[in-house]
Length: 299
Ligand SMILES: NC(=O)c1ccc[n+]([C@@H]2O[C@H](COP(=O)([O-])OP(=O)(O)OC[C@H]3O[C@@H](n4cnc5c(N)ncnc54)[C@H](OP(=O)(O)O)[C@@H]3O)[C@@H](O)[C@H]2O)c1
Image (tube, rainbow, N blue to C red; front, side, top):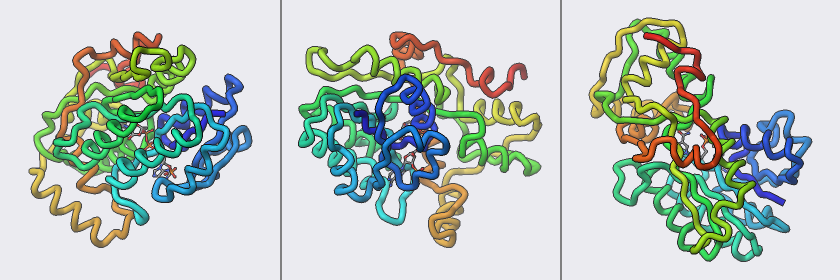
């Protein structure tokens, strides 16, 4: 049995389709099973929440492999970014050790570091350390920006593109190597089937997942606008103004803000892998260019 968290997310939904198609028994730890769509009848469901450790301890029964994708880039009612990413992963690792899990697959992020300016990347560093320092054979993925057509981030950009100008937080200079969620799911499936991490000297492997192109935040917006078929001038908005405005929106929106400063700040930090798509290629995957996936070729 494989326990999958985050099965309703971008990577999780793409991975789940591959796992069930391959006949792998899967248990999904979810907050709302309806969000699994048609796949919910093909899997075991464990109701749970990252903010509720007993729920995932129970989900661990009879599990040999954990693929832990669930994470948060904004605070939730039941837990902060640090609790949901850092502490929950630490507790999940403990539960996995106690349950005799044989392999723990975890999604960190490029540039995860205890000193990063963003709360998300600091919390991922804590989580990654908990996985790495555990006694469990582990496979850690550190991706750059992950996207899929119509995902919440591109959906937000599409709505913003209805304005006469496209606002951009900051100067748009941070660099990314965007990778399609389907390519990421292929990498995970590849690692699961070849036992990456299991049997290596220290029982741990780390893969940096990056797409073939390095694009600045500004270039990402230009590409997104091309994919929407809209021409808009890009308007850089100084980050102190963005941060104050989004914090004000968060204060009144009660968890339903269209964007938060913690999310916007992630676009201020470059996420690139020195080896580009090489780790993905080692797993048998040639990541596609974002322009090709979104149908935004040309300028
Ligand atoms: N997307 C990126 O650009 C990016 C970059 C670097 C690293 N990563 C990491 O890669 C992994 C996969 O990313 P993704 O883009 O597929 O994520 P995603 O689309 O944002 O999905 C997040 C998943 O986590 C679940 N989740 C959130 N809060 C939860 C909670 N309190 N309890 C239980 N489940 C909860 C969500 O379930 P609900 O359906 O219930 O909301 C959803 O299934 C994540 O660990 C992410 O941090 C992503």
